[in-house]
Structures are given as structure tokens and as C-alpha cells.
Length: 96
Image 1 (spheres, rainbow, N blue to C red):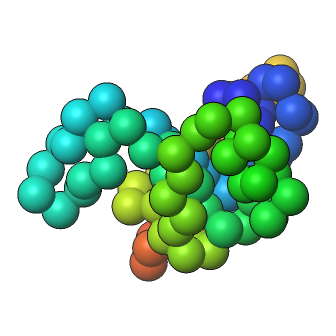
Image 2: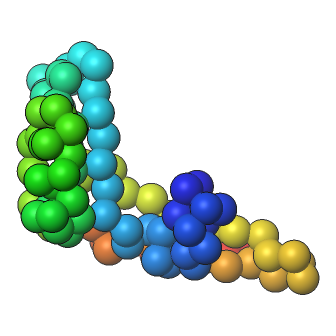
């Protein structure tokens, strides 16, 4: 939503954008890292180092290493739809 509303990305750009998350507790045996800011390396070393300097405990993920994926639909003002599909998984955005 931030990428679409605040940054003006298209739905495809938003689906492909680097991801981050901060867990307050381990959500499963597979997803651990409570208290760490997990951030994809595509944010770049400068951003990651700035976050570390602010006191964040960082876990750098691979380029597309965030565990979730999305397919997005945006209703445009003219009544048409824009679709986006995440490159992290095999998927497609398909109309209805």
C-alpha cells in the first residue's frame, strides 16, 4: 500500500519492490527472528548501514528472500483494472 499510495508505484512495481518485516515473536518453526529487522539485500548496503546506525538489529535476506508473495489488483479511476504478480513465486495475475 505504501508503494502504491505514497510512492506512486504501479501494481507490478509494488509486487516486485524489496520487502522487510519486523517480528515481535517467532511465527513458526520456519519463520524465526523475533526482534530483528529482516530486510532484503536489494535495499542496498547504504540503507542497511543507516538502519544499523539507528540501532536496528538487522537480518539481511537474499535479494528476493522474503517469504511471502502477492498478486495485486488495483481498480483505476477510469474503471479499468491493473494487475501485478510477484516475481518471488510462480504465479500470474489474471482478470475476472
